[in-house]
Image (cartoon, rainbow, N blue to C red; front, top):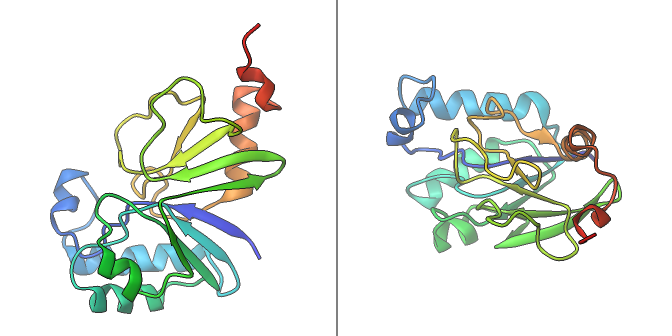
Length: 180
């Protein structure tokens, strides 16, 4: 089972098309193309961590979208627009405000908003987040933005994302954050 991450789909949110300069003419096209993009990389056996702001509107409409998305286990890390009814009625495997995982020997925090300090939280090397959509990521040595707009609406393989980030920054262990 492969693991994927993505955030900030904003299904059924018409205004997000204009706010984030999304390449869609309307909500129907946006929803359809985002479902197609998801299913083009995620198989029915995979696991997906959606890092917040899944969608707007009626939970029953969002449940229809949710059921069309591939993945054996789909987890929600709550975002600022994820309302309680959506969280409980759509069908998520789990719903959390944050989650720490070990990926390829590295401790990774999944949380909706980017980390604001130069040093990540204790015992974490990378913070994977959304929330900022297509705005530049600050503290890129710590934060990885997986908002739908910056990942071309495609869920990203979690292990590859972490591996590539560690390779780019030349870091192999959390000791890089200790004072010398």
